[in-house]
Image (cartoon, rainbow, N blue to C red; front, side, top):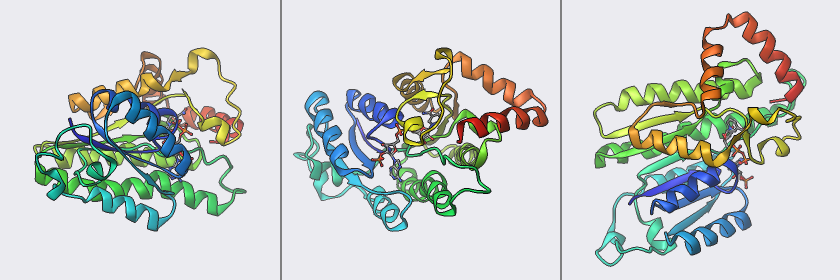
Length: 275
Ligand SMILES: NC(=O)c1ccc[n+]([C@@H]2O[C@H](COP(=O)([O-])OP(=O)(O)OC[C@H]3O[C@@H](n4cnc5c(N)ncnc54)[C@H](OP(=O)(O)O)[C@@H]3O)[C@@H](O)[C@H]2O)c1
């Protein structure tokens, strides 16, 4: 039993990861922007799974908010870890005093615009949440994990990382490569890094961006299946996880296909979907 901090924990893949961790008796720190949704999720998880939950309302495109979450990740085992406090279920205050054993960088969104004519502030927000915050939060979490000799980081990338679909694909490619480099650096420390590359997944992601998500049923994954595959990969210490045979196939095709073809097909899809 450990404590996990999950960003993007109020919806979609992050919410499913939070529930599955709670069902496996992990205490949780839930991070997202909307306080009412955070409280609602925390209440339900506490009631149903009987684990302790701390909530942190933070907009991960805002540096001060990222710094607050980073501070939480630097918490080391302290006085609150006395024998009494170690007994579950923990209160939110007890959870707040515990070090983080698993960091899940899930928060993200579709940029939803072409780069050349799009709003640069929106580009900065996307870069901040999907790259900047992943960098800062991982840097805050990992040294303590290495000192304790155990821990894990799970980063959410996407199959689009292997495409050429706008700056979203570029951010997700960064997440994928970053995680692989981190995993190599951490070898032998007892700390692991895993990147999950979901394909199209049912969540609020496409609606939020007003995207055309008119793909056939076969193309869609369920968020709970993605979460299950990702957490199984973390438990095995696996570095790269691509949920489902379908998307393993897509992944292989994207790796083998000439880049010119990938750019042509992905560029067409990108204009249509506005990633
Ligand atoms: N759905 C897909 O097809 C798909 C495929 C591949 C990869 N992914 C990736 O999977 C991850 C999760 O996406 P999802 O599909 O589960 O989307 P989702 O249902 O829209 O959930 C996104 C979560 O992130 C939070 N969030 C959004 N902006 C934030 C910000 N600025 N600061 C802090 N939290 C923020 C949201 O809560 P608030 O709005 O309250 O902040 C929500 O909890 C993302 O990284 C996405 O890129 C998704």
